[in-house]
Length: 193
Image (cartoon, rainbow, N blue to C red; front, side, top):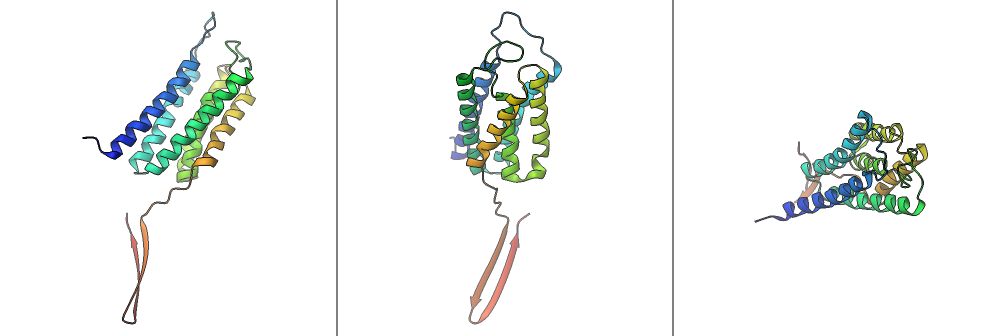
């Protein structure tokens, strides 16, 4: 029998899979001449899948289901806005492979993940995520798929979605108590490690 926690995990993983599959379909090149894919672009493509997956998995590992739901809502908004703009603006890519350059989907996704970690758990935990997100954005410029405007817009979309859905994580590890019994006052402090 599957418990409620397992159902939530399955739901979030299915949502993440569908979103990332959308990016994979979008990444397929339809031009007749296929551009050479370099190591930097390959690493950026791996980070596109690895960073959101690791972010969501970490929320589940620490028992933060509320945060996992906030991450999922923000990711859905990020993908929706990104692809809405891609298909309505139709900006030509620098390598002339198609007209879905603006904004960068890779960048919006990884910056959403980094921004979520920053906003939910704090800046010191988000530093590695920001490094990976910055590398991915640079890889999109290096591979000639986007220009600087595309990646800046992608980063703004990814970070902006966190402002709507992500709240600071309130870990319940401290408790302050007070009791009064027959004129005796007692203050207690409990801390769970």
